[in-house]
Image (cartoon, rainbow, N blue to C red):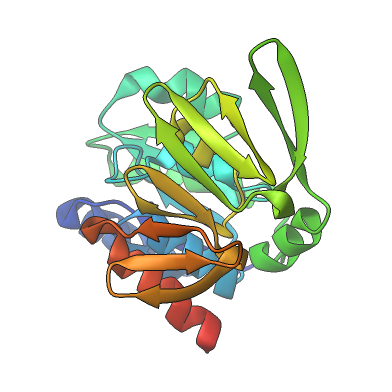
Length: 238
């Protein structure tokens, strides 16, 4: 039987421990990582080959559903949650199964068997995403216009009430929240403040609690976002 490399993603320690213990009972499951949030998951997906993701929905900063929407290519997904109202949206995103907490080992096994019936695809997520994003673009709605933007042209995005300002050479006002827009962006975009998302490619320097972009725009780094930004920089340096 083929090895299935998997990740657990849940902000609750007990929930992670239960899943880890269930995974150990099945010899063909190999636990690659146990993550507390969506950002840790994205980091693992960039470094490792993963076949199966056990994903909680309610996680801080970025929900499980939002995480799935950011991934152009994803492993098989089994959602694990205490909230049944997300089932329809989960299945619209082609998840393999939906486990409602608390679930038994038998129910867990049934979900895993669905994954085992599918051929294992040894795809490294980062490699596929990089190819996709080289010429990727996005459509935005501004007033009555629908505008196609090259993602590489977007330097940063700024919250503006119930709107956002997208800076891609010129400024485009879009009727969408910052969190909603982030779910449509690849992982070279990172949130640095409750009001700002930057394209990591434009980052020039960090000076205290400010960053400078290559287009000479200065932005403030939010305290709760600083750690994730520095981790991303450390990874790039490596």
